[in-house]
Length: 564
Picture (cartoon, rainbow, N blue to C red):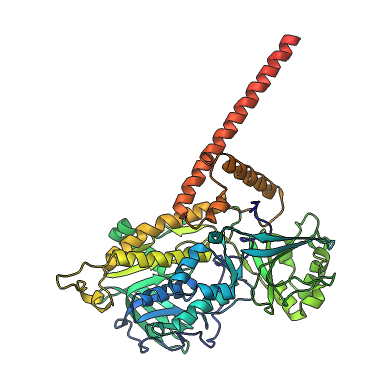
């Protein structure tokens, strides 16, 4: 396959699987729960926070990381696993923020382990062969078919609700349906250390009807995103407990500057197979990019906007178009639907926007404040043993970043696999009778004898370096893909130069970062090490070229002086 710089609208040109820490909207009312979900509290409501109900595991957050973790624990034989999801449904979709996931071979590992790969293939669009269409303001089109011959690099695109549904349906089937309870509309109100002699940690939450309940888990997983309450609790505990801080870190955020951090985005809802003015339609199964032109309505000097459409497998599903700009772009000052119609008609004349988008939808799009790409952030701790319980961070709670490399959901699923490996590594030895040594106290209720403190330490050791490396890869990957400015041109030049050099001298120069991330056989730490080596080689080459140029100039100057 011929390699090239990633095309606009390609794998990373989409709103993230995580939103920036913007003010949260109120939680929606409880909706019909997904398979395996319930809207009642897991324990009898109790105002007595000092007497919480025991649980083998509590997972805060019912997104991909939380549901996948529940599935993994249940497959190990764990029961009394409780997932607390603040939204009314795990399949909740925010129409202002389009989450379209790109599941690569890293994320696919977990699905294959649970026999769900066929579900992914049925619900997603494979990149084995996919159409890419770019439409310019004058109606001109660039169409090509993008193919990936290496099956290990095939990925699948699908909307967030479709992916979450795969996991929720698996949890709704026996034997997992009797082992895991997914409680929707449950708002966590406190995560604290227990003040009882037995120790441990306590999670207090409010159920949809206002009833309050508390759980005391042996294992607590924070899968609750960028603004994780579990991570905040760990940070507070570490601040007050020097021994915990020395063992597992402070859990305070570490931020990595990235050019794409702070970019703003929002989503325009479109009908299936949206029509263009020339009568053609943009098929749901392909990528599309509507390239804009400068608009007088947006003011002089405003960068042209563009809309990116990611593929959907369902031919009759509504499409979403993603608008991504820098902070301060005048498009964010357009606050009413009529004005937005005018701006889009002038900037993107490829489509009849009044025919495509109903007035109410356009007004909603104009009024939406959307989201912003977060700065790559990770804490300095991935988990800890706290008073006999293990408290771990997974997914966005452990690492959040812009969607440049398409690794958001995939890295979360890798965290789940690492959790499984850590539990296996911390299994207690067999006794002479062949049975595993029984745990004491809270561990005795677990379906397997595992040293939770050792599991927490092992997970911390495994995943913290990966989270740190992944965040450091973001500014080195493809941060300039969202615009067509000079920085994007320079990035393309460097990308192609490194690609050519890596093919000519593979022993000296590794491939570009973006391509190495597509190799699921490499972990993030290994990729970062190779990127650092490429940087050293690149600097050495530039230094050699500069020295050669200076030497040439000096010789020419001497030759000119001699001729004079």
